[in-house]
Image 1 (cartoon, helix red, strand yellow):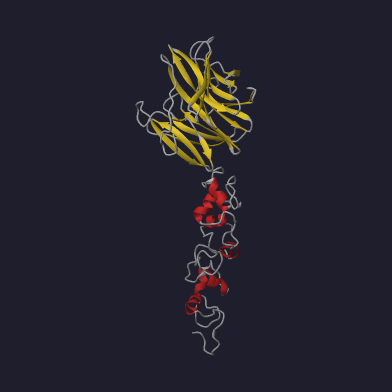
Image 2 (cartoon, rainbow, N blue to C red; image 1 turned 60 degrees about the vertical axis):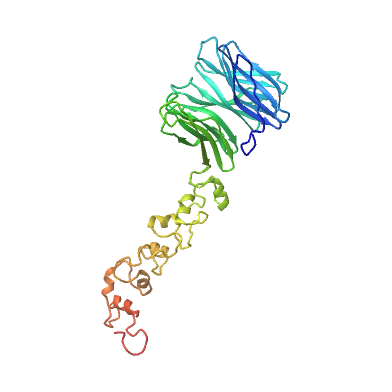
Length: 406
Protein backbone atom coordinates (compact mmCIF):
# COMPACT_ATOMS: atom_id res chain seq x y z
CA UNK A 1 0.00 0.00 0.00
CA UNK A 2 1.32 3.45 -0.86
CA UNK A 3 1.15 6.61 1.25
CA UNK A 4 -2.20 7.51 -0.32
CA UNK A 5 -3.90 4.34 0.86
CA UNK A 6 -3.83 2.65 -2.54
CA UNK A 7 -3.06 -1.08 -2.71
CA UNK A 8 0.10 -1.57 -4.75
CA UNK A 9 0.08 -5.35 -4.56
CA UNK A 10 -1.30 -8.09 -2.33
CA UNK A 11 -0.05 -11.54 -1.50
CA UNK A 12 -1.95 -14.40 0.09
CA UNK A 13 -0.20 -17.31 1.72
CA UNK A 14 -1.74 -20.38 3.28
CA UNK A 15 -2.45 -24.06 2.95
CA UNK A 16 -5.74 -25.85 2.53
CA UNK A 17 -7.03 -27.30 5.78
CA UNK A 18 -5.03 -24.82 7.83
CA UNK A 19 -5.75 -21.40 9.30
CA UNK A 20 -2.96 -18.86 9.25
CA UNK A 21 -2.84 -15.38 10.69
CA UNK A 22 0.01 -12.89 10.75
CA UNK A 23 0.96 -11.10 13.96
CA UNK A 24 3.88 -8.82 13.07
CA UNK A 25 6.08 -7.60 10.22
CA UNK A 26 9.57 -6.12 10.01
CA UNK A 27 10.76 -4.54 6.76
CA UNK A 28 14.44 -4.36 5.86
CA UNK A 29 15.14 -2.81 2.46
CA UNK A 30 13.16 -4.93 -0.07
CA UNK A 31 12.44 -7.78 2.32
CA UNK A 32 9.54 -8.25 4.71
CA UNK A 33 9.87 -10.66 7.62
CA UNK A 34 6.52 -11.85 8.93
CA UNK A 35 5.58 -14.00 11.92
CA UNK A 36 2.26 -15.47 12.93
CA UNK A 37 0.33 -18.59 13.81
CA UNK A 38 -0.75 -21.73 11.94
CA UNK A 39 -3.66 -23.81 13.20
CA UNK A 40 -4.08 -27.34 11.89
CA UNK A 41 -6.61 -29.72 13.38
CA UNK A 42 -6.31 -28.15 16.81
CA UNK A 43 -2.52 -27.91 16.75
CA UNK A 44 -1.10 -24.38 17.07
CA UNK A 45 2.37 -23.59 15.69
CA UNK A 46 4.33 -20.46 14.91
CA UNK A 47 5.53 -19.53 11.44
CA UNK A 48 8.20 -17.21 10.05
CA UNK A 49 8.42 -16.11 6.42
CA UNK A 50 10.63 -13.90 4.28
CA UNK A 51 8.99 -12.05 1.42
CA UNK A 52 10.66 -10.10 -1.40
CA UNK A 53 8.54 -6.98 -1.84
CA UNK A 54 10.29 -5.76 -5.02
CA UNK A 55 9.78 -9.02 -6.90
CA UNK A 56 6.54 -10.02 -5.21
CA UNK A 57 7.60 -13.49 -4.22
CA UNK A 58 7.95 -15.63 -1.14
CA UNK A 59 11.61 -16.35 -0.43
CA UNK A 60 10.98 -18.99 2.21
CA UNK A 61 8.94 -19.91 5.26
CA UNK A 62 9.54 -22.08 8.30
CA UNK A 63 7.26 -23.48 10.97
CA UNK A 64 8.25 -23.73 14.62
CA UNK A 65 6.53 -26.62 16.34
CA UNK A 66 7.00 -28.20 19.74
CA UNK A 67 4.87 -31.01 21.22
CA UNK A 68 2.29 -28.45 22.37
CA UNK A 69 1.09 -24.94 21.43
CA UNK A 70 3.51 -22.33 20.04
CA UNK A 71 2.80 -18.76 18.94
CA UNK A 72 5.07 -16.12 17.40
CA UNK A 73 3.91 -12.55 17.95
CA UNK A 74 6.80 -10.24 16.99
CA UNK A 75 9.84 -10.25 14.73
CA UNK A 76 13.02 -8.20 14.23
CA UNK A 77 15.88 -8.41 11.72
CA UNK A 78 19.41 -7.09 12.18
CA UNK A 79 21.42 -9.60 10.15
CA UNK A 80 19.78 -12.39 12.11
CA UNK A 81 16.06 -12.87 12.63
CA UNK A 82 14.65 -12.78 16.15
CA UNK A 83 11.08 -13.95 16.73
CA UNK A 84 9.31 -13.87 20.10
CA UNK A 85 6.13 -15.37 21.49
CA UNK A 86 5.37 -18.25 23.80
CA UNK A 87 5.37 -22.03 24.02
CA UNK A 88 3.17 -24.33 26.08
CA UNK A 89 4.93 -26.48 28.63
CA UNK A 90 3.61 -29.97 28.00
CA UNK A 91 4.96 -31.25 31.30
CA UNK A 92 2.75 -28.95 33.39
CA UNK A 93 -0.45 -29.15 31.36
CA UNK A 94 -2.53 -26.82 29.23
CA UNK A 95 -2.42 -23.14 30.16
CA UNK A 96 1.14 -23.01 31.42
CA UNK A 97 3.23 -21.02 28.96
CA UNK A 98 6.87 -20.02 28.78
CA UNK A 99 8.23 -16.99 27.00
CA UNK A 100 9.92 -18.05 23.75
CA UNK A 101 12.69 -16.40 21.73
CA UNK A 102 13.89 -17.87 18.43
CA UNK A 103 16.93 -16.93 16.33
CA UNK A 104 17.41 -17.78 12.64
CA UNK A 105 19.91 -16.69 10.04
CA UNK A 106 18.73 -15.05 6.82
CA UNK A 107 18.68 -18.41 5.04
CA UNK A 108 16.03 -19.72 7.48
CA UNK A 109 18.54 -21.91 9.31
CA UNK A 110 17.75 -22.31 12.99
CA UNK A 111 20.46 -20.75 15.17
CA UNK A 112 19.04 -21.14 18.66
CA UNK A 113 16.20 -20.56 21.05
CA UNK A 114 15.65 -19.49 24.62
CA UNK A 115 12.71 -19.97 26.97
CA UNK A 116 11.97 -18.14 30.18
CA UNK A 117 9.19 -18.73 32.61
CA UNK A 118 7.74 -18.90 36.08
CA UNK A 119 5.38 -21.50 37.53
CA UNK A 120 2.47 -19.85 35.69
CA UNK A 121 1.82 -18.04 32.39
CA UNK A 122 4.55 -16.03 30.65
CA UNK A 123 4.13 -14.49 27.18
CA UNK A 124 6.25 -12.21 24.98
CA UNK A 125 4.61 -9.64 22.70
CA UNK A 126 7.22 -7.32 21.14
CA UNK A 127 10.95 -6.86 20.56
CA UNK A 128 13.05 -3.73 19.96
CA UNK A 129 16.78 -3.32 19.24
CA UNK A 130 18.64 -0.46 20.89
CA UNK A 131 22.40 0.01 21.31
CA UNK A 132 23.10 -3.62 20.49
CA UNK A 133 20.67 -4.97 23.10
CA UNK A 134 17.30 -6.60 22.51
CA UNK A 135 14.43 -5.31 24.65
CA UNK A 136 11.52 -7.75 24.77
CA UNK A 137 8.21 -7.02 26.48
CA UNK A 138 5.36 -9.26 27.52
CA UNK A 139 3.30 -10.44 30.48
CA UNK A 140 3.81 -12.74 33.41
CA UNK A 141 1.44 -14.17 35.99
CA UNK A 142 4.12 -15.68 38.17
CA UNK A 143 4.97 -12.86 40.58
CA UNK A 144 1.73 -11.33 41.91
CA UNK A 145 -1.96 -12.17 41.98
CA UNK A 146 -2.49 -10.08 38.84
CA UNK A 147 -0.67 -9.76 35.54
CA UNK A 148 2.65 -7.94 35.47
CA UNK A 149 4.58 -6.50 32.56
CA UNK A 150 7.90 -8.25 32.05
CA UNK A 151 10.83 -6.79 30.13
CA UNK A 152 13.75 -9.01 29.20
CA UNK A 153 16.97 -7.49 27.89
CA UNK A 154 19.07 -10.05 26.03
CA UNK A 155 22.29 -10.08 24.06
CA UNK A 156 22.95 -11.58 20.61
CA UNK A 157 23.63 -14.95 22.21
CA UNK A 158 20.13 -15.07 23.72
CA UNK A 159 21.51 -14.54 27.22
CA UNK A 160 19.42 -12.46 29.63
CA UNK A 161 21.30 -9.35 30.76
CA UNK A 162 18.43 -7.70 32.68
CA UNK A 163 14.93 -8.63 33.77
CA UNK A 164 12.28 -6.20 34.96
CA UNK A 165 8.88 -7.03 36.50
CA UNK A 166 6.45 -4.12 36.90
CA UNK A 167 4.53 -5.19 40.06
CA UNK A 168 2.03 -2.33 39.80
CA UNK A 169 -0.95 -2.19 42.22
CA UNK A 170 -3.31 -3.23 39.42
CA UNK A 171 -2.41 -5.85 36.88
CA UNK A 172 -0.75 -4.52 33.72
CA UNK A 173 0.17 -6.21 30.46
CA UNK A 174 2.88 -4.80 28.21
CA UNK A 175 2.15 -5.30 24.51
CA UNK A 176 4.72 -3.10 22.76
CA UNK A 177 8.02 -1.41 23.56
CA UNK A 178 10.13 1.46 22.18
CA UNK A 179 13.58 2.47 23.47
CA UNK A 180 15.70 5.57 22.83
CA UNK A 181 18.22 7.76 24.64
CA UNK A 182 15.46 9.32 26.72
CA UNK A 183 14.05 6.11 28.11
CA UNK A 184 11.91 3.03 27.68
CA UNK A 185 8.28 3.34 26.54
CA UNK A 186 5.79 0.52 27.09
CA UNK A 187 2.12 0.38 26.07
CA UNK A 188 -0.54 -2.18 26.86
CA UNK A 189 -3.41 -2.28 29.31
CA UNK A 190 -4.14 -2.54 33.00
CA UNK A 191 -6.89 -4.20 34.99
CA UNK A 192 -7.33 -6.70 37.79
CA UNK A 193 -7.64 -9.52 35.25
CA UNK A 194 -8.54 -9.12 31.57
CA UNK A 195 -11.66 -6.93 31.68
CA UNK A 196 -12.55 -4.20 32.29
CA UNK A 197 -9.26 -2.68 31.13
CA UNK A 198 -7.86 0.71 30.12
CA UNK A 199 -4.96 1.59 27.85
CA UNK A 200 -1.70 2.18 29.74
CA UNK A 201 1.39 4.04 28.51
CA UNK A 202 4.46 4.14 30.78
CA UNK A 203 7.83 5.80 30.39
CA UNK A 204 10.80 4.41 32.33
CA UNK A 205 14.34 5.70 32.47
CA UNK A 206 17.05 3.37 31.22
CA UNK A 207 17.33 1.84 34.70
CA UNK A 208 13.61 0.93 34.69
CA UNK A 209 12.58 3.65 37.15
CA UNK A 210 9.12 4.92 36.21
CA UNK A 211 9.13 8.54 35.04
CA UNK A 212 5.43 8.92 34.23
CA UNK A 213 2.38 7.05 33.07
CA UNK A 214 -0.88 7.94 31.34
CA UNK A 215 -4.07 5.95 30.92
CA UNK A 216 -6.96 6.18 28.52
CA UNK A 217 -10.33 4.50 28.66
CA UNK A 218 -13.67 4.58 26.89
CA UNK A 219 -17.04 3.79 28.42
CA UNK A 220 -16.73 0.13 27.50
CA UNK A 221 -15.08 -2.82 29.15
CA UNK A 222 -11.86 -3.30 27.21
CA UNK A 223 -9.33 -0.76 25.93
CA UNK A 224 -5.73 -1.63 25.16
CA UNK A 225 -2.78 -0.67 22.95
CA UNK A 226 -0.61 -3.05 20.95
CA UNK A 227 1.89 -0.80 19.18
CA UNK A 228 3.96 2.34 19.81
CA UNK A 229 6.25 4.66 17.82
CA UNK A 230 8.16 7.62 19.24
CA UNK A 231 9.15 10.21 16.65
CA UNK A 232 10.41 13.66 17.52
CA UNK A 233 8.21 15.20 20.19
CA UNK A 234 5.28 12.84 19.69
CA UNK A 235 4.32 9.37 20.87
CA UNK A 236 2.00 7.54 18.47
CA UNK A 237 -0.22 4.85 19.98
CA UNK A 238 -2.81 2.93 17.94
CA UNK A 239 -5.25 1.30 20.34
CA UNK A 240 -8.38 -0.81 20.49
CA UNK A 241 -11.45 0.51 22.29
CA UNK A 242 -14.62 -1.19 23.42
CA UNK A 243 -17.21 1.59 23.53
CA UNK A 244 -20.03 -0.56 24.90
CA UNK A 245 -20.53 -3.43 27.29
CA UNK A 246 -20.60 -5.97 24.45
CA UNK A 247 -17.63 -7.36 22.56
CA UNK A 248 -17.59 -4.81 19.76
CA UNK A 249 -14.31 -2.96 19.28
CA UNK A 250 -13.14 0.14 17.45
CA UNK A 251 -9.70 1.33 16.43
CA UNK A 252 -8.51 4.47 18.22
CA UNK A 253 -5.42 6.52 17.42
CA UNK A 254 -3.83 8.32 20.38
CA UNK A 255 -1.18 11.02 20.00
CA UNK A 256 0.84 12.15 23.00
CA UNK A 257 3.44 14.89 23.28
CA UNK A 258 6.60 14.27 25.25
CA UNK A 259 6.93 16.45 28.37
CA UNK A 260 9.99 15.02 30.10
CA UNK A 261 10.01 17.38 33.07
CA UNK A 262 6.25 17.57 33.64
CA UNK A 263 6.02 21.37 33.30
CA UNK A 264 3.15 21.21 30.77
CA UNK A 265 5.39 22.28 27.89
CA UNK A 266 6.29 19.88 25.09
CA UNK A 267 10.00 19.14 24.86
CA UNK A 268 10.12 20.46 21.30
CA UNK A 269 8.57 23.76 22.43
CA UNK A 270 11.15 24.05 25.20
CA UNK A 271 13.97 23.46 22.73
CA UNK A 272 12.47 26.23 20.61
CA UNK A 273 12.38 28.84 23.39
CA UNK A 274 15.67 27.78 24.96
CA UNK A 275 14.42 26.26 28.22
CA UNK A 276 15.62 22.91 29.52
CA UNK A 277 13.13 20.14 28.64
CA UNK A 278 14.48 18.03 31.49
CA UNK A 279 14.24 20.75 34.14
CA UNK A 280 10.77 21.98 35.13
CA UNK A 281 12.08 25.31 36.46
CA UNK A 282 14.87 26.32 34.09
CA UNK A 283 15.69 29.67 35.73
CA UNK A 284 15.29 28.42 39.31
CA UNK A 285 12.86 31.13 40.40
CA UNK A 286 10.31 28.77 41.94
CA UNK A 287 7.91 28.75 38.97
CA UNK A 288 7.73 25.89 36.49
CA UNK A 289 8.45 26.91 32.92
CA UNK A 290 4.84 26.20 31.98
CA UNK A 291 3.59 28.44 34.77
CA UNK A 292 5.85 31.25 33.57
CA UNK A 293 4.45 30.98 30.07
CA UNK A 294 0.90 31.18 31.46
CA UNK A 295 1.79 34.25 33.52
CA UNK A 296 3.63 35.86 30.62
CA UNK A 297 6.95 35.93 32.46
CA UNK A 298 10.29 34.80 31.05
CA UNK A 299 11.20 31.21 32.03
CA UNK A 300 14.86 32.06 31.37
CA UNK A 301 14.95 35.07 33.74
CA UNK A 302 14.26 34.90 37.48
CA UNK A 303 13.17 38.54 37.47
CA UNK A 304 11.42 39.20 34.19
CA UNK A 305 10.67 42.91 34.81
CA UNK A 306 13.99 43.64 36.60
CA UNK A 307 12.24 45.22 39.55
CA UNK A 308 14.22 43.35 42.20
CA UNK A 309 11.50 40.78 42.94
CA UNK A 310 11.82 37.25 41.55
CA UNK A 311 8.90 36.15 39.43
CA UNK A 312 7.77 33.59 42.01
CA UNK A 313 7.72 36.22 44.78
CA UNK A 314 5.62 38.47 42.56
CA UNK A 315 3.10 35.68 42.07
CA UNK A 316 2.97 35.17 45.86
CA UNK A 317 2.38 38.89 46.38
CA UNK A 318 -0.12 38.97 43.53
CA UNK A 319 1.89 41.55 41.60
CA UNK A 320 2.66 41.39 37.89
CA UNK A 321 6.02 39.71 37.14
CA UNK A 322 6.15 41.53 33.80
CA UNK A 323 5.58 45.06 35.19
CA UNK A 324 8.08 46.66 37.56
CA UNK A 325 5.34 48.89 39.02
CA UNK A 326 2.26 46.67 39.11
CA UNK A 327 -0.04 49.23 40.74
CA UNK A 328 1.32 52.29 38.84
CA UNK A 329 1.94 54.30 42.02
CA UNK A 330 5.47 55.38 41.12
CA UNK A 331 7.23 52.78 43.27
CA UNK A 332 8.70 49.56 41.95
CA UNK A 333 7.26 46.36 43.35
CA UNK A 334 10.50 45.55 45.19
CA UNK A 335 10.61 49.04 46.78
CA UNK A 336 7.12 48.50 48.12
CA UNK A 337 7.79 44.96 49.33
CA UNK A 338 11.28 45.40 50.79
CA UNK A 339 11.73 49.04 51.75
CA UNK A 340 8.43 50.77 52.43
CA UNK A 341 6.26 47.84 53.58
CA UNK A 342 3.53 48.99 51.22
CA UNK A 343 1.37 46.81 49.00
CA UNK A 344 2.76 46.43 45.45
CA UNK A 345 -0.73 45.55 44.21
CA UNK A 346 -2.43 48.68 45.65
CA UNK A 347 -1.46 52.21 44.73
CA UNK A 348 -2.84 53.43 48.08
CA UNK A 349 -1.86 50.89 50.70
CA UNK A 350 -3.35 52.75 53.71
CA UNK A 351 -6.47 53.91 51.81
CA UNK A 352 -5.94 57.52 52.86
CA UNK A 353 -6.54 58.92 49.39
CA UNK A 354 -2.87 59.58 48.69
CA UNK A 355 -0.91 57.27 46.35
CA UNK A 356 2.01 55.41 47.92
CA UNK A 357 4.53 56.91 45.52
CA UNK A 358 3.50 60.47 46.36
CA UNK A 359 3.69 59.74 50.07
CA UNK A 360 7.20 58.31 49.79
CA UNK A 361 8.38 61.20 47.59
CA UNK A 362 7.12 63.72 50.15
CA UNK A 363 8.35 61.93 53.24
CA UNK A 364 5.00 60.52 54.36
CA UNK A 365 4.24 56.95 55.39
CA UNK A 366 2.39 54.88 52.76
CA UNK A 367 0.96 52.50 55.39
CA UNK A 368 -0.20 55.13 57.92
CA UNK A 369 -3.53 56.67 57.01
CA UNK A 370 -3.41 59.26 59.83
CA UNK A 371 -0.83 61.40 58.05
CA UNK A 372 -3.41 62.42 55.44
CA UNK A 373 -4.97 64.89 57.88
CA UNK A 374 -1.68 66.37 59.13
CA UNK A 375 -0.54 69.88 58.13
CA UNK A 376 3.21 69.38 58.06
CA UNK A 377 4.39 73.00 57.62
CA UNK A 378 1.40 74.88 59.06
CA UNK A 379 0.22 76.50 55.85
CA UNK A 380 -3.37 75.52 56.53
CA UNK A 381 -3.42 72.64 54.06
CA UNK A 382 -3.52 69.00 55.17
CA UNK A 383 -1.37 66.50 53.35
CA UNK A 384 -4.26 65.15 51.35
CA UNK A 385 -5.16 68.69 50.31
CA UNK A 386 -1.55 69.33 49.35
CA UNK A 387 -1.73 66.18 47.20
CA UNK A 388 -4.93 67.28 45.53
CA UNK A 389 -3.38 70.70 44.72
CA UNK A 390 -0.02 69.17 43.78
CA UNK A 391 1.79 71.34 46.33
CA UNK A 392 4.68 70.50 48.64
CA UNK A 393 3.46 69.48 52.12
CA UNK A 394 6.81 70.66 53.58
CA UNK A 395 6.83 74.10 51.92
CA UNK A 396 4.17 76.68 52.75
CA UNK A 397 4.91 78.51 49.47
CA UNK A 398 5.57 75.75 46.95
CA UNK A 399 5.99 78.02 43.94
CA UNK A 400 7.94 80.68 45.82
CA UNK A 401 5.70 83.56 44.70
CA UNK A 402 5.39 85.03 48.18
CA UNK A 403 1.83 83.84 48.60
CA UNK A 404 1.19 80.84 50.90
CA UNK A 405 -0.18 77.79 49.15
CA UNK A 406 -3.47 78.22 51.00
